[in-house]
Image (cartoon, rainbow, N blue to C red; front, side, top):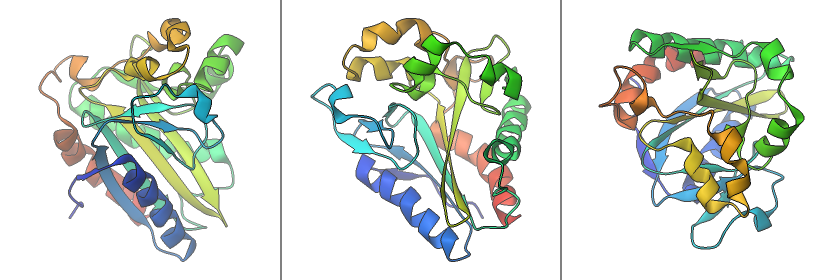
Length: 229
């Protein structure tokens, strides 16, 4: 049975992933999903705190990239596996493939027209978009993330590795536009062009009534099977 969706503050969300990764280093796979309440800005591991505007809780995750706006409308999933697991190959890019494809297949089952980003497409990203992604994760694309058929980013993926164990982190903006991150970043208006190429699930065809809990009901099973190896 898939674990129920949790409601956590930002610090507890960060601690959840860290705890799953620690358990994975000891040989145990783990999977959990949450939404963040109250809303918070979660910075990337090396991102300067000066990027955050005052007025919102701020936390720092262990994975890299730029900031993500997390709230009750964004589904966050942490999946951790030990060394030697099929989701923990030495090639970081290859590790993303089954995760992205499982999410793509589940979303397509809901009638969402979407695809995964191929490696060549991600590598062709412009320097301007790469720079923007260092400030806001949603501004860029990485291999095997999920985008709508028109290219707008719908699912973000990240990884953290320790002693061969891997923490996969997944973010899906269900009812919150991912571009809202710009409201909480110093100079966020400068990222408007790159963040325009993003989408929330509730705006996708056939998903107007989607909720994070409902999406977790759909994704939990496929991701649990991946975690089981």
